[in-house]
Length: 155
Image 1 (spheres, rainbow, N blue to C red):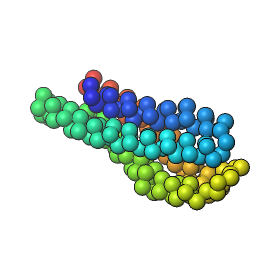
Image 2 (image 1 turned 60 degrees about the vertical axis):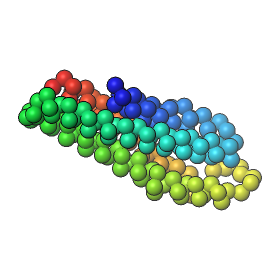
Image 3 (image 1 turned 30 degrees about the horizontal axis):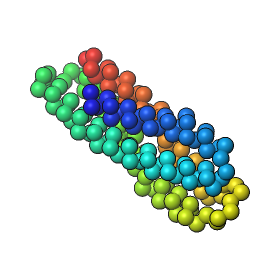
């Protein structure tokens, strides 16, 4: 159950960011929109790291329990597990790129913003677009990982 809650936290945070926060900031003054989006990014990163940690721990626990119940993994089960782990690894890599590559640049560009801002500066907007692309990829990969998890439970 903790595994599902952690998954819900991570994917729910991603969906909230894409469906609610990102469209809402378009209605705000650029300076306030940038600050709001950045605070949302920081919150999403915190929730995501907690969820990723829980997913790793509970995933290992689930794997150990399954290995004890059925020591020899059927071919289909092994393929499903490998695909799920590959997708999870890709999602973690994307998250790391967001956090360790793009976020520091975004934060630095935000600190350099002038007090009066009438439009989004192009360099900042460019990094946000890259950051959002990774978020959208994870939003697409997440449901695939869920479906693979369901298939693993049924095998």
